[in-house]
Image 1 (cartoon, rainbow, N blue to C red):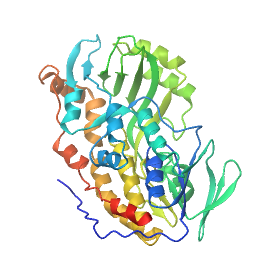
Image 2 (tube, one colour):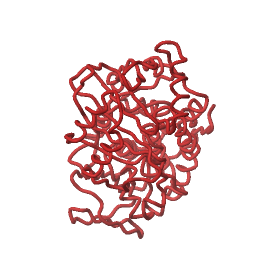
Image 3 (cartoon, rainbow, N blue to C red):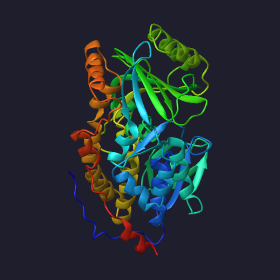
Image 4 (cartoon, helix red, strand yellow):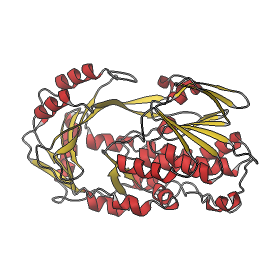
Length: 417
């Protein structure tokens, strides 16, 4: 069921004789998608990224629904399919490692033509697609200050000042662009009661294209093997009524906290805790959503997690970021001014965002049951399925995944020639 129907047969490209200058903060997923389309529509695009190259890692992400159409329009769908992770199953085990039940992941993905792939593979493909197009990247730099007038005056961390007609924050849930323009993160971040720690560790269980999860009330440990290599992605997720840290956790304190919280867990959690102490790639964060009454202010607009992070519990962060970037670029190209373009962007995207953010409850009950009763009910549901059965998408998920008819901005490209 589509919540939005948006024929675009009357789209008209609005572009001044001199291309508008656009600065995009962030080179992960939304940033390169935006850069690709804005460049196609004739804008002069710069992307600034604090890291030394495209951001990404090897942990798995999902792409589904209209985001697949965005990839198709970019000429990347076949390559993304080639990078697909053929995860065979997700197993649920008890304290002794005995199987409670398992879900066939390949079948679950093919039902909706979803694609699961390493995050780094997607970010590399998106970045590569912008090379040689005129998009300019500034790595190892970031926005320090910005001030709006007839243009946006930006001072970079490198000390260099510059002026842009538009600044777009695609810099993630902890967006500095959002903080500079809209105020503190706490005004928009809605903590969901969980924290997670991700790191790499030795593949002790000799896993191959599969994931295993163990849970106790409010605690979950996950091992995810994206291939048959000697290492796996490990995750330790725990419930906490109040966030134990805010924007940037002290990793030493976080290691100690997690060790205390999981010290009595079974399965192979003791070994995971040992590896956690020595991991040099530990990433810790709260599980939260970003909810904002408006995604733009003057000549600054937000996209992706910076504007509407849904949290990993929904599995929709990547798809929302890609679709949002495509829609924002198309609306900027088809409206005479920034303000009307941003209004149209929000009108098209907000129902889609709201529907997908609402999926968070289902994700948390499956992955991290908070109580003994919830855990028992989850395990009974899994054990009651056929051995290695599939879990089809719920009606709420199907509606959310297809809650946007993707506008067709392709006709605008002929106007740029």
